[in-house]
Image 1 (tube, rainbow, N blue to C red):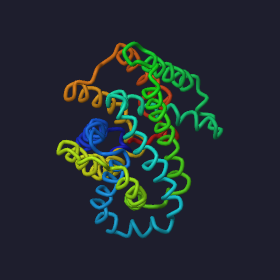
Image 2: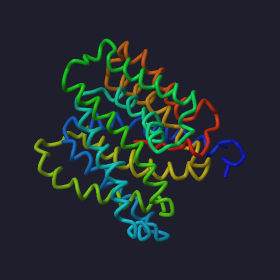
Image 3: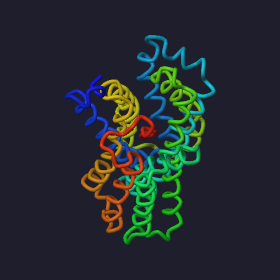
Amino acid sequence: MNAEHGGFGRKGWILFAVMAFVWGITYLFIKEAVASFSPPAVVAGRTLLGALLLLPFALRGGALRAAWKHWPWVLAFGLVEMAGPFLLLSHAETQLPSGLTGLLVATVPLFAVVIALLRGDRSALAPVRLGGLLLGFAGVGVVVAGPGLFPHEPASMLAIGEILLTAVMYAIAPFIIAHKLKDVPSLGTITLALFAIGIGYLPAALLTQHDVPTLRSTISLGLLGVVCTALAFVAFFALIREVGPVRAPLFTYINPIVAIVLGTALIAEPVTPGLLIGFPIVLIGCWLAATGGRVRARAADAGLMSE
């Protein structure tokens, strides 16, 4: 693996770029999908489609069978990594721009440091990491309270809370993987979890979908399931094999840039002064909190999962 020799290599950089784009464009597809699909329908659609596409790969080598033996923890992982976040993101994007959503989700490493502190991880007490933690949350405050966001609108503030809750759940999920599912094939875990969440949301999707979906929303939902769920997880696992689990999640720092650029260019989302000022503050704070300012993060610092 190239990670052992300190370099990404050509394949590693290609996979890194794929992940930076694929999970960066997720927020645009969600924004387009919820235009005529209900949030539960978006969750059910993307998870079931993703699961069906990953099923042949999971069946090969017995990954799905191995995951089934640990189904309670697989379900717990699915709840905090998919069921909650996918619904919260879909609902939040009925109120907020996709670029802002992508930026706020990038606070995952900040919450991961908080969880590490609560678990007694002394490495999280390093001054640089604590400084990054404070800086990151200050950046979030600038984005939320900055001019142009209309922070006094209850719907907008609720949506911001939903996104930050999503970030908390994304920060919790790696601890379940690391301590309860570390010996279970990842592809089996993801496929089984996607099926469970998709089937669980299907009744709510059928009950809440009152409008006839537009072609644009349908295409976006399809791309969300195929590209941003199934393909994204396959590419993510390949990236981990190529560069190791420590540096693979670093593409998440690029995702907000992709989300903001695409949202602005394709659907004319506003770029507010608060976003322009807070955006670099949040990213720098996240990087310092997650890595301690090191270019090469330690294995203990890799507690990060993406959307």
